[in-house]
Image 1: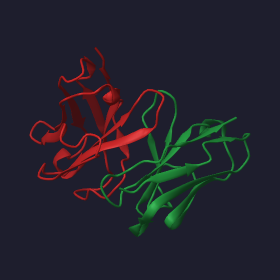
Image 2: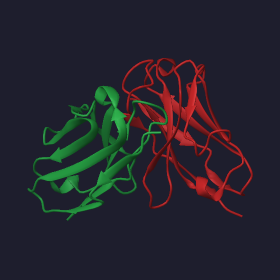
Image 3: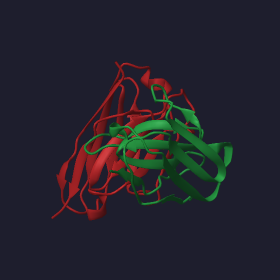
Image 4: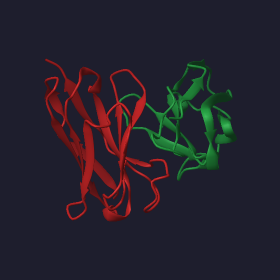
Length: 122
Length: 107
C-alpha cells in the first residue's frame, strides 16, 4: 500500500545540522511532488517546503528559506530535508506528505507519514 | 504570503449538532485552491476537502465545504463522536502554501 516513512529526527544543538529522510513505497514516486510540513509541540501545522516531481524546483516557507534544502533521489524513492543552522524554534514533528495528483505542485496533501521528531536544544 | 485566519478558535458542541468553521484569507485564493484537514491527537493530518468543496476519497458526506475568494466555510452537518478534533484550512494557490491556525471542535 501507499506509505511514507520519515526518519532522521533527534536532538541537536542550536546552529548544527540534521538531515531527514522520507522513504516512499506503493506508488510511482518519481511522478509526484513531495512536501514537508512541521508541527511544533502543542501548535498548529506549518508548511515547510515542496519539491517538484523531478527535483528541479523547490519552494520554501520564509522561516526556513536559506537554511533548509529539500531534495529527492527518485532512484531510491526517497525525499530528504537538509536542515542547517538549526534554531530552537525549528523544534517540531516533521511530516513528509504527498499530493493526490501527478506532477502539479498546486494540490493539497492526501498521504502523510507518521512524522519524525526534531528537538533543537543545548 | 497569504495569511489564513480561522474562527472560532474553539467550538464546543455535542454529538448530532451542526458545526460551522470559518477560514478567511488575507488575499483572494484564486481557483478556490483551499483545503481542509482534520487532525486528532498523536496522528498525522487527514485531508477532508480540496478545491474548497470537493470531498477527498473516503470522506463522509456530512463534511461539506463552500466559499470562494477570501471566505471559506467547513460544515459538519451532524457531529459524530469521531469528529471531535482540530481542523485546519490550507491554501495551495501560491507558495508558501500556508495553513490557518486551526479550530478545535470539542465536546
